[in-house]
Image (tube, rainbow, N blue to C red):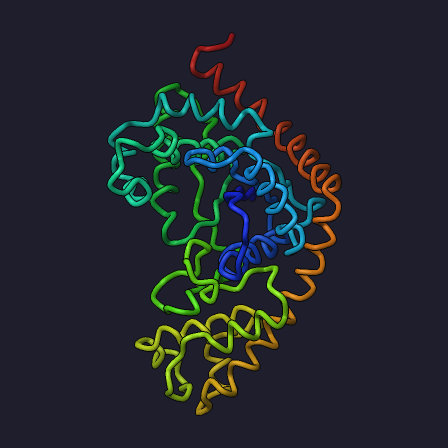
Length: 331
């Protein structure tokens, strides 16, 4: 089994990124062959300063390694350092259909009212995603609910390529459900909104670099309600802020939400919040220390990424060659 997944190097990783994706990646390393990339080619579909992008790539790599991604176990690299991603994306753009891309909901969400003014890259973004996966003949892709449409498109492109060119080189991937459950972490100020770095309130999120005191202060001020915690998780359905904090505790400790509630049933948030703070500090303290060490050794980060790019290129280059030949572009 080979799994491929990427994350945009936007800087400023927060608890939602960690519990929602990264720790799942860490667990995957013991289950299958993993390739994880920093999606810097995807990042340039919107305006970004070149110096900032370079810094973000290095910062994201350091954060992933500090969180437990092991460059000796997994192939970790920057997408732009493997030219085959861009090469295969063009070949697949000539296979994908405009009608397919017109149905992609993320383009509609990201382009907003300025659809005519956004980059073509934002529109064809899903085809580059298909190249990212098909390039390595990945059997599985870890996805959240909002990415299932992209997996369907990747499968459609793979099947059409194979049919059009009487080939079997494209492997239609399956969604990957390993690595345990990924937590859906919501804002500490509004339990109906995902935790996001774009939220103007710093109190809405916990950064991986927050001090122990900052974590304690943000949890103390996190929005809750006056009701005690129930025994049954179903009774939190109409209490989004309470459900969010219980879900965070479960994800951090590895317990089920039901087990968390068994410990705190009948108690209020005056008892729950200090326990949650303690659990978060225990998780994030060592990670923050490791991240600070890695930040001071940029050469080590660059070396990890270069080694990863070398391994990824060794897998990707022969596959692109096969795709060129299938399409009649090489003998």
